[in-house]
Amino acid sequence: MRTTLTPEQIQSYRENGFIILDGFLTLEELENWRVCTEEAIQLRLSEGTLHNQYRTDDFYAQVFLQALKLADVHPGMRKIMTDPVLGKMIAELAGVDGIRIWHDQALFKPPFGNATGWHLDNPYWSFSSPDSLSIWVALDDATLENGCLYYLPGTHKNPTYVNANIGANQRDLFKAYPEWEKIASVATPCKAGSAVVHNGLVAHGAGANMTNGPRRAMTCAYMPDGATFNGVRNILPEEYFNSLKVGDLLNDDIVNPLIYKS
Image (cartoon, rainbow, N blue to C red; front, side, top):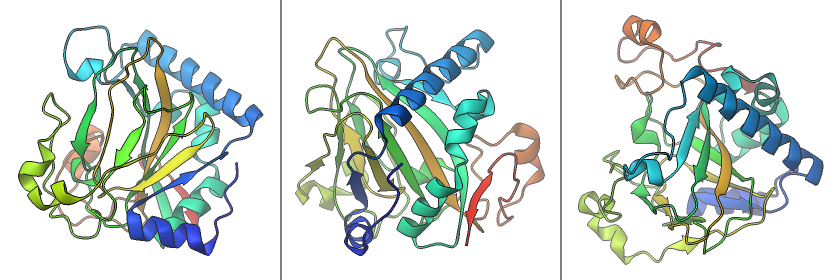
C-alpha cells in the first residue's frame, strides 16, 4: 500500500473533506483484496448474514450489495483491515493519535444499478465526531459511467448531523441543507486499486451504474480513539449496546479494534 502522505495531500483532505489516492494498491495487493472480499461475501451468504443483496426489486437493493464486517468472518480480510500501516495513514489524515475500526463493508453497485443518494456517513453511526472518516478502495475501475463517487467539497466543516436516507429521491439531503445546492459537485473516477478517503461528515453520493458490469468497492469506516456513545445502535451487538449509556467510551477492542496509536 502507498500510505505515505505529503503535507499538501493532508491539507487538501482537511480543506475539501476527501482525497483520491491513485495507485494505492499494487497489482498483487489488489488481487488479494478482490479475493478476500469475494470469499468473505460468500461466507456471509452461506451464513445468511449478508446485510443487503441486490436480488430483489427493492430500490435500496439495487443501489448496492452491502456486506458488513467481513473482517469478522475472514482471516485474510481481518489482516488487511487491521494493518497498523493503514491505521497510521488514516490517523494522519484525521489529525488524531489513535484510530479504531468502526466497521468494514463491501459495496458492490450492480449492473444497471441505481444511483446512491446524497448523504453523510457519521450521523448513521453510534458516535458523533468531526474526525470520523472512511476509505473506499476501488476493486474495479470506478468511472462516470458505472457509478463513481461524487462529493460536495467543504461540506464537512459545519453540518448539523441531520442526514438523509439513501432512497429513491437523490435530493433529500438538500431539504436539510438547501445552501449546499450552490456547491459544484466533484466526481472522483479512479482506476482499480486506487482509494478515496473521505470525512464522515462530507456530503457524497454516487451515480447510477449505466453499464452491464458491477462496480465493486471495499471500504472501511474509522472512529477516533476516545469517541463516546451517542445513543444510536447502528452495528453495535445487542448485548454491548444495552450495556452502554450516552457518553460512555466506545473502547471494546473486539467490536471496534484499535489499529493505531501514536
